[in-house]
Length: 182
Image (cartoon, rainbow, N blue to C red; front, side, top):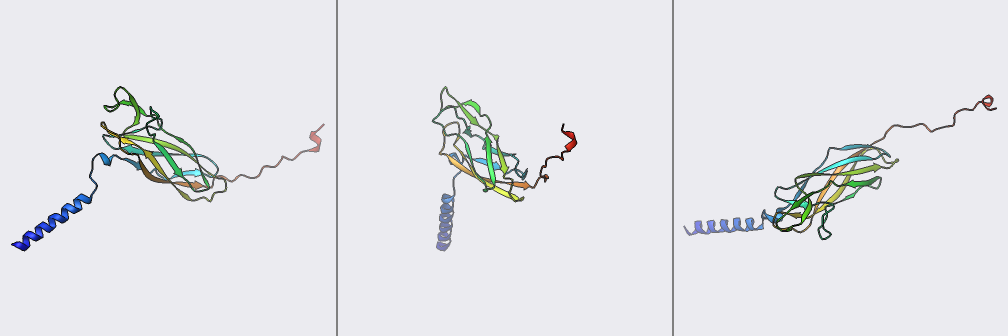
């Protein structure tokens, strides 16, 4: 019977150690998720828009890109593209003005639930037509109704397919007739 008790005690200790090593859900679990878009096809030399969809977890909000106070951390998207792909304008949605118990009498401009960020990408004229991966990070600060948590960065990536586009013939001056000039 002594061996059985030692075995049970050892197993319980092992389970406790493994459980303690696991991250606990709760306030630290405040997160935003990213749903990669379908591959967007963009023609060489021409801009195209990619819509990036994010979701703030239930019970949380994050500051908008233009928070209502200079002391709040804005949500920002930083992208790293291959050298032949130019990142243009990044358009953030308007946030929603909301009141929270921890900010008495002040409305904060925040994102909740689903929100989309639009990014203009433009491949250079001489880029090789193929798929390109664009990587980035969404920096945000999540809060619940009681407190705000340390800022986080959400790594994300998406693909853009560059198409050749229509080939155009070089322009030449039209033929001139010597009889047309007087």
